[in-house]
Length: 269
Image (cartoon, rainbow, N blue to C red; front, top):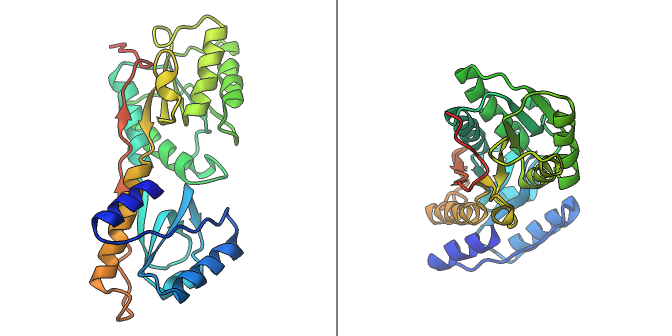
């Protein structure tokens, strides 16, 4: 995201200064104060994972764009967010269109309100997927939640699916690390991907292309998010929205997650 922001800012004649908070709210406020004192033109307030959170009052003193953040108060900020709902819907549509009928969700339960205690991506991906499955009349066979989206949990959850005796022709894993564990569980039991079970995932982490077969996944658009946030902030600065005390409209700029179609989803039509 930082690289994308730097590229977009440089193209428009701006320089980017980066402050790292490590999630420390006090340090975040101190950095915002320091940037205000140094008369920066504006701020992109960003998190690595999509969160709903309160926005510090210090951010109101200068043009501010939120990246990966949904404000929990009524403040009107321009927000730049990954379009996780659309990605979840596209994932479900891909499985439906390729003829899958015995689908298991790996990493989340079946209720978006309780999808995951951290971040919004799980709830949004799940909401999008469930809407498409409902429209297509497809029932999810099982939905297996976990707090830790890591390979050992993917291995454990997929092992549970296989040991349960439930029919399965597709696994929708809610990130690539879970999918890596899923691959290991399937391989250990002699289940072939995608001939026996398709695996579809999200994020397109660096190892996804190196799994065998290559993992089909929706890429988290880090660079595009950074570029969009920088462009939104520069537009805000150049409109002079902060100079006359007016507020920007509560705009949400949604950035799509592109599909990386590899070899882990079979056509069962």
